[in-house]
Image 1 (cartoon, helix red, strand yellow):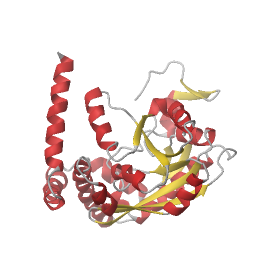
Image 2 (cartoon, one colour; image 1 turned 90 degrees about the vertical axis):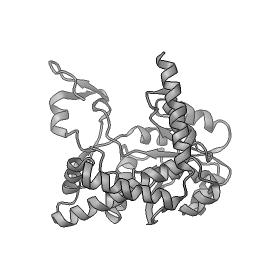
Image 3 (cartoon, helix red, strand yellow; image 1 turned 90 degrees about the horizontal axis):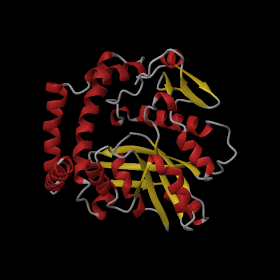
Image 4 (cartoon, helix red, strand yellow; image 1 turned 30 degrees about the horizontal axis):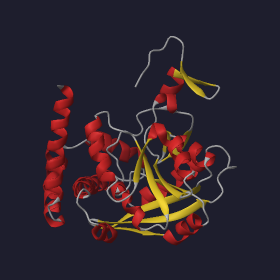
Length: 318
């Protein structure tokens, strides 16, 4: 019964998403304008989280300046929603006009040498449109790591949209195995890693200073990159105008196997911070990224032989 319900909801969601995606961009942006008024003036979507994140990240800015960034964030975020909806029906021509890539010459060079590339990205700009990268690289398999949704039907829906333009989705828990498997096919890989999420307590092994705050960071991507000898590339995303983005590829380290532990992770966050400070309104400030603190971690957990354990007498926290 439950399975039948989810299947029905899947077809309804697919149909509704598809109909919305048929609307032209001018109409979608009118919807975005209405959504902006609702989210910023009426609902005040995640206002406390956004303001706390901005205030901690930019202590030098006045309240007026922070309000200005928050308003621009809400406008961009509403655009991001309708742009992601539109992805279901966007053509190759539309995407190549609206999501451009620079620095592809160097990326294609390392791919032509038989190497694979790890493209580090953040929740910056429209990361869903980055799935159009296969149109810009030569003779390589493009894929991205993602967290599957608990509902298999809605996971299938989002996966379908993300893979429409040739980039494959790899579930996070299968990442290393799949990357090795694809690598044995003889084709070079371009793997997209969005690595600025908040790790679970038991995945915290490294802390950095990021946006003026002590921040726990994911390090699993670095282990995969070094194990498979991928070239470390940063994708600097900017919004050039409404509905138009550019991703500039910069090779940070071509040889990664012997790099010191956490160097890739540290360099990635340094690059990401530069991008955010350049265009702060297109970063995902509504995510409670700094909810896990070092003091809380030290109180409840300890790391033994590279694994995080709950301290004796403590109950698990989330």
